[in-house]
Image 1 (cartoon, helix red, strand yellow):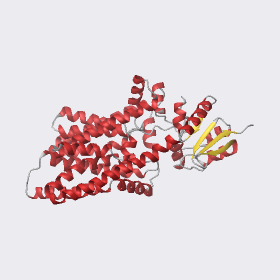
Image 2 (cartoon, helix red, strand yellow; image 1 turned 60 degrees about the vertical axis):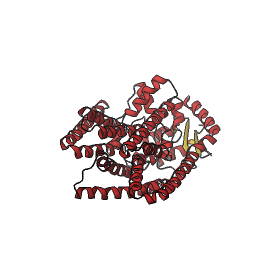
Image 3 (spheres, helix red, strand yellow; image 1 turned 120 degrees about the horizontal axis):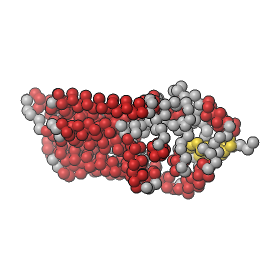
Image 4 (cartoon, one colour; image 1 turned 180 degrees about the horizontal axis):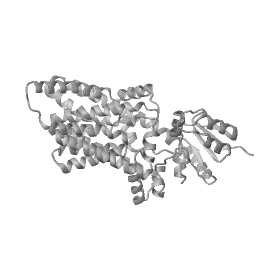
Length: 449
């Protein structure tokens, strides 16, 4: 939202020199922030609400497109609705749909591109429109460069090699041209921010922990998808060996949905980057939501005797998913509502402090932005740059020693927080600020001369 404010003010979104204040990184392409800025200027509603409405809208679009895939790949409207509900009902989707973040918009644009390619693969106009959707998705979040475009390319390759080459050539050329233009306008800032500044270390244990959590939420769905994938591959091999012709839907399941799933799995591996979280699973959740009804139909058609047991297991899975959704909502949102009076009091302190000077914080930067102040220091991003040896914190440390900041808020129960606050900064805070601890918050106020 700070980036949205910068667009509204006409300020630079992508700074070139990361060593100069203000110490912020715009680590995503600009499309989402531009869209939110436009919506905010039209609706004139609170800034964060504009971002949340945008995410919710695109989450609804995602579910609709997923339902259309489910319906057209099974021929069953009820299974199409089931696909949509599997997506919308997932705890990660429920939570992420309410956040002013780039992910839902990027996902919706990618799915729209794939849907257009699926339905209108033989039309130059519609293929061009799909390319625009894929590019818009990538310029919302760069990790969406893989799954959707890969599936679109393979699907076109299945039908027509020349069209597939034309698709990938146009997609690549327009993507590079757009990147080059924005990078030139920003004087190299785009490359600095979304490439060089994305230097987070990879933590395999973190990736494994989050993957285990995902599997624990929907184990039966992933088992059904895995079994179904094996059955479909066997059926595909059998058809090839007997020279049986595949229909449009069967072919897309293998060459479209199959490669989308591969791309989603590869994208999911980036969840191990320090600072990444469950939003990197969204494409995999989409794939499972489309696969599940396809596999159920396949199993029921071939083995009707096991229909009741599988439906029973699926019912248990859906109940478990609802329990997980309730748990995640309570743990992530419920606690915040319980502490509303604390947040309100803290917000008033931030507002008063911003009238005296610049406020620094990590997890309470939303209050700084809502107080009308631009973010001066982005702790996590610059903490990672410092740990990678790409940023010298000396200049900011001297500003802290000079008591430039009337209030510093650090979430947690201790000052030691290497991910966000380099030791140099913590030393400067300790020597020059009065420090108090309360309610999982460290509050730092300049010492009297």
